[in-house]
Image (cartoon, rainbow over the protein chains, first blue to last red):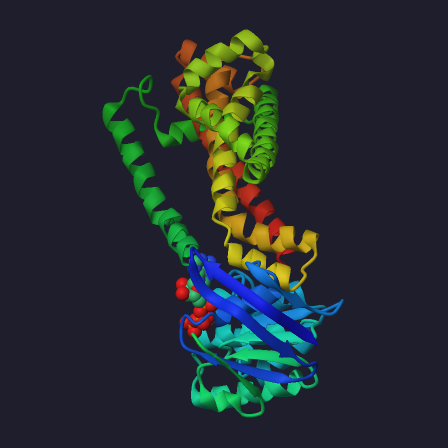
Length: 188
Length: 254
Ligand SMILES: Nc1ncnc2c1ncn2[C@@H]1O[C@H](COP(=O)(O)OP(=O)(O)OP(=O)(O)O)[C@@H](O)[C@H]1O
Ligand SMILES: [Mg+2]
C-alpha cells in the first residue's frame, strides 16, 4: 500500500497540491481525472521522487518498483524500440517483439530507430517499455493519447492483461478509460 | 536523424564533380605551361608513382602519421575527460573557458613558433595537434553534454537503470552526434596544423620536411605530390576514425 499524507506542493508560490491525501491499495487500478493544470503530472512526479514535496509524506513499502508511461514518451530516438526497452527491462528480443506486435506495431518497422516512428507508434513503444520492465506500481500519464479508436481498444486490452494484479495509477481525460478503475477526481 | 542525412548529402562528392575539377586543373596547367608554378595532375601522378618507391617517402609518412595521430589521441583524451569534469563541476568549466577561448584565437603559426621554444622539433607536431584538436573536442563534447535531455535521465532513474548502462546509453547516445562532429573536425585540423608545424620546425624525416625541401629546391612536382599525399592521409584518417566510431556506436547502443 502506498500512502500519501497531507501533501503540499507549490511552484513559485503557485499552489498545485494542497493538503492532498491518497491511499493506493495493492493490486488496485486507479483512474485520476482532473482539469488541465490541476497537478496530475505533478502528483506522479512526486510519487516517482523526481520532485520533492514542500510538506507532507509519501509512504511507500520497501522494494517498491515503479514503471511509468510519462506524459511525453521519453524514448531514445536514435535507437530501435527493442534497444529502448532493453535499457530498462531484462527481456529478450523475442518477447519484446511479441509485445510490440500485440500493440499493433508492424513487423517491418521493428528494426528501425524510433525516430522514424509516428506519434502513435512511439506512444505504443513507451507503453511496451513500461509493461516489460519489472515493477509493482505502474504510473500512466494519459497513456492512450494520440491513438485512433481501434488501436486504443487493442492497446487497452494488452495493458490490462499485462498489468493484472499490479497497482496501476492512470491519468486520463477520457471518461471511458475509467471503467474497471477506481476514480480519483482532482479538484483544482 | 534528419540533420545527419542532410549533412551527409552536402558532403557527398559525386565522381563526375571530382573529375570536372581535375580536368580544370589539367587544362589550366596545360594552358599556363609553367611546371614550376602549376604542375598538372598527370605529372603529379607520375612523380607520385616514383616517389612511392623511395623508402624516405614511407618513413616520412610513418613519422608524421604517428606524431599527429598521437596528438589527436591526446586531444580526444584531454577534451573528453575535461568536458566531463566541466559538465560535472562548474569551477572547472569556468577555469577552462578563458583557456579554450585563448587557444582558439591564437593563430597556428604563433603557436608553432612559441612551441618551438618549449619542445624539440621532433615532438612539435604532437603538441600543436593537441593544442588545436583539444579545444574543438572539448567544446563539442561539452555542448553535447549540456544539451542532454534531462527528461531521459529522469526516465532512467525511474526505471532504475544501472549507472554503467545509464552512462553508456542515455548519456552517450545523446552526446554522440556532437562527439562525432567534434572528432571529425578535429582530426582534419590536427593534420593541417601538424603539418604546418612540421614545415616550420622541420623535424628530419617528416612529411613537413619533405614539403619544405620541395619548396626550397623548387621541386614543384614534389610539392604537389606531398600536398596530395597529406590530403589523402587526412581523409584516410578521418574515414578510419568514423569507421571506428561507428563500431563504438554499435557496441554502446546494441
Ligand atoms: N517544474 C515546474 N515549474 C513550475 N511550474 C510547474 C512545474 N511543473 C508543473 N508546474 C505547474 O503546476 C501546475 C500543474 O501542472 P501539471 O503538469 O501537474 O498539470 P496536469 O494536471 O498534469 O495537466 P495536464 O492535464 O495538462 O497534463 C501547472 O500550472 C504548471 O504550470
Ligand atoms: Mg499532465
